[in-house]
Structures are given as structure tokens and as C-alpha cells.
Length: 361
Image 1: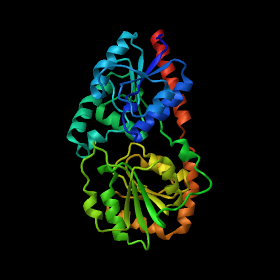
Image 2: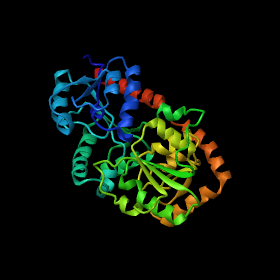
Image 3: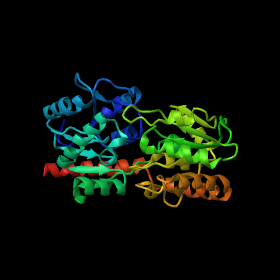
Image 4: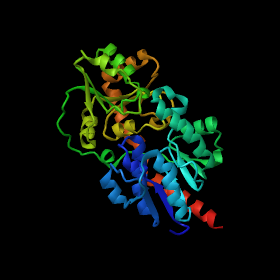
């Protein structure tokens, strides 16, 4: 490796794909084309094998997970002349200073009760330490940037925003819709994480009594999230459907057929699903909190996620106003165009090149 090289911490290839891993994959694939000398380093236990092959990932070490990241990866980097390390998914080695760190949001710090004790302790130990030693700390919204500055005192000069976007399959949905599997329905999409406020959405939906309309919830429960107790709420309600995990192709079809998309989340560092919905021509209802107004602009109906009545009224408003739905569809398409993975990857490549140039002086 020469002094211009960059290594990407590709531990995300060993994890199920949620919004966090999507950031690593989308930016990583584009950086491969933008930077001639980029290495993707991963432990052996790869789940995303096709993506790893496309990246030409280098497998190193005998351990995995946090141990690999904190011990084996730094040893490898030091043996290669200590190149710049790019970390895209919240964690990074503490004992390696030549790095860029990406922290998507501080939900684990501000709301540890939303996560398992182990996850919360690990993140609250690791993240404050890695941001202190990094050359640059990246995040995905102005909202998260302000949190990093306020909570961890990261200077604004060390902070920058790399906006996420949506995957091509949502950006260019098919013009011919597939079969509608559920009739008339409101769609909700996410991992079943307590901060996504599915309990509040279900209660508001049940109170709204939307005629002949189902609530379809897409998402698999993830082990890091605390138990949400959703099953008890819907056991005897045939109008609420949990799909479990589905493919992106199936999700595009659900967005295209939905009456509208509901996302009354308590907390978002960015919030990709509303943009996916907008791109597929689906009107959106989102929370008026955290980063969502920054992302969705004037292209959504806003509700207070802490007020069931506000969510209920938002559901009724979008359900009953076809003209509003059409207006939001038009505004939504314009909103999506503001965010581009390619532009974000080009900005990131520029930061990497600049840091490597400074080191050579």
C-alpha cells in the first residue's frame, strides 16, 4: 500500500442490511469507482457475499465483530503503513488514530432505553472515544451534526454531512405496477425498533377507524432493539398485517399501491423510507421531530409522534383528502432529487483525497 491509499472498514458486510449497512454499501460501491486505491477490509463471516465480491473485499483475521474491529484490524493497518481508515457505520477502532468516522445519529446516547443493555453500553463506551481521535467525523443530517457538537463537543470544523439517498431500485421504480396484494392500505416500513413508534401508529390507526383500510407493516425485529410488545396489540385485529422481511422488489410494489405511507418515528438521524415512498409516488406522513423536517421539507403531512391524537388526525386527513395526496406525490418527487448517493460519494472521495494530501506535506 502507498501513502495515498485508503482502507474501508467493511465489517458491515458481515451484518444484516438495515439503514446503517445501506450507507456503507452504497457509498462503498461508488468509492470503488472514484478512488483507484481503495481496500475493503472485512472479517471472515461475510453475509453479503455478492456485494463483497463486487467490492473485491479483503478478508483478514481469525476473529469477528467488535473484537476484530478493535484488535485485529488495527494490527493489520499498522503492518501496512497505517493508511487512512474510513469507517462508515458508527463504529471504528479506538486505538487507531488515522481515521474518518461516520456516526449516523446519537439515539443510543440520548435514548439508551430503546436498545438492549449490551448494545447501549458498547456504543456509549466506543463512540465518544472514536470521535475524539478521528481526523473527521461525518454524519447524515444537520440535526445529527448539532447533536455531535452538543453532546460530544466535536468541533464544527471536524464535522461534515454526507447525505444518504435511496437505492436505484426505488429511484427508478417500474412504470407498470405489479399486483396489489392487500387492497386499500396504509403502509409502514422499518425495523421493529421501539423508536419507530409502531405502538403509537397502531393505536392511532385503530382509533382512526379508516373505512375498509388495512395497516401493512413491513419489517423484521432486530435483536439489538428492546421488546416492543406489538403482538399483544394486534392479536385480534385482522386489519393490521405484519409482512416480516420482504425483498426490495416487493417493497417497491407495496409503495406503489399504498394509499399513503406513515412514519411517526420518535427519532431519525435521516430517515430513508419516506424518500423511498416519495420516489415510488406514495404520499407520506412523518413526525415533526429530529431530522425528518430537514429531509421531507414541504412534501409530507407532519404529526407529533408523542401525541396519539395528532397521529390519528394526520391519518384521517391524508385518508380523506385525495387532492392533498396528489399534491404530496408531486412535491415528493422533487424532494427526492435533492439527495444523491453519487454526489455524496464524490464529496467523500474529495475529503479522503484532501486528508491524504495534507499528510504528505
